[in-house]
Length: 133
Image 1 (cartoon, rainbow, N blue to C red):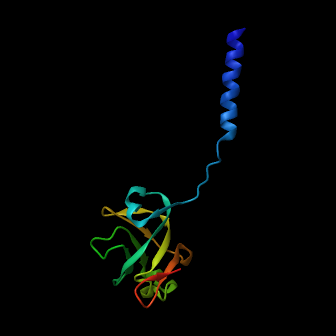
Image 2 (cartoon, rainbow, N blue to C red; image 1 turned 30 degrees about the horizontal axis):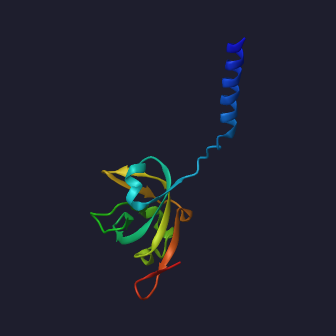
């Protein structure tokens, strides 16, 4: 009889613990650009300073924290989407958030931008070289 009561108490404790767990969401993780490499294949919001806007024939790269080849993260816009971002050059030295799935391209983390809602300016640069919200 004692073992049945003990079993029931343990079962009740387990069920009670499960009921108190927070629901898990599929919300993207917010990370700085420097940690993007640790979150390959994750949906994320990556925040960092655009150190370089690099235009090539078929794409635009936003390199974060440092210019190529020392960037910590890259946001890529292919030619068929560049018209969605007409003032992309003005992002240099600004703090931005990039959202999407982090991919590994030749050992470097990147997110490919296909829509404007994936990019948000967090801080603007001011004339003195500082930043303002």
